[in-house]
Image (cartoon, rainbow, N blue to C red; front, side):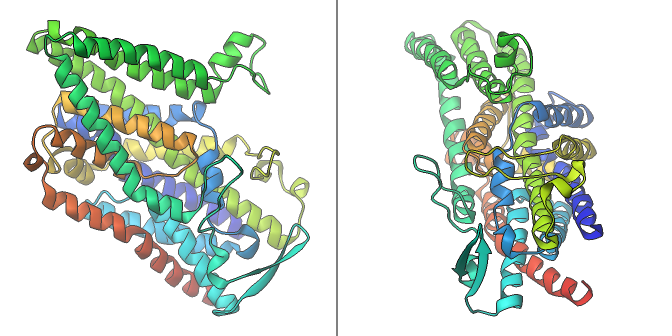
Length: 444
């Protein structure tokens, strides 16, 4: 039990480090454009990091918890993965490199699991009993590399996460580029951008209405209206609709505003877009630590041979299995969201400088486009239960707005350095975790 508690404490410390390591993601553009002071920006971001507790479910947490087969590993694996993730995050923070905390955690978990398989079985196959069935696995299949998912569902696994190292910033870049082009054309006197905007508003209302769930299994209120309105799944889509409709409303009147009026409104809109991105950051990144804590509890139950009901009520955790919903005590998400919010309050000024000025010069106009694109990307990937990097997403979005000016507006030397950091994060974290695992086995 002592080792399990140690893992939970270290996981929350990682979440705190994640907060100040990734604070730059949400506040870099509002600081660069001087909409908020650095202190105001981190308070603003931390508040919405924490608010994400009431908006997002636990889909990403479930994906992270299943990075390795929990029946095949022990607590030392998870401990090594968390220690490696903390070390890499602190190193990249010290160097001012906006690497991905998400991929650090995934790489550490996977690397420690593979090291465990080699330590226990060498490079030979081994057998495990899962749900009463004996299964033969290769040593490297201790990690869930690829799971095709349920019929009609999306695949999961480490390979899908690796694919999104490329896709998340690419989607962010394309989205921010298109939003920037939309805003630029809306500034003109042509009627066509206004027709497009009106059509987009209608399409957005239809889409949100289609995504909202009106049949709530466990209503939180006696009123059906409030149960539907405040259901976390629905709140996320209401936010998507609000973001798109807010930008659309501005686009309808953009051409009638002078420079000072439009700049004033854009700065206010940056508060909305940065808040939306901070919500996505909190919902995406806090869930990864929830997944690690859930995996640790499940591994403890498996190895100790206890049943879930015999665990203390505050440690009764179960992952979703088929149609059976998972169990997540309230203190776990509350602690994770609190830790990441506290970390964000601590700031991460070295990375803010890289994100806010070194990639490309960012104005309020471009800040709105980048943060809006980043937020929408995070909401949709969270809906697909894919843990993506908020760092990669916002970096791609900033590059996208830079490209609307000219290709040379993006400082590609800095960008290439960032991409190398992205590529190396998972393998280096995995290697660090493997080393940590073998060192820990000497003492544990």
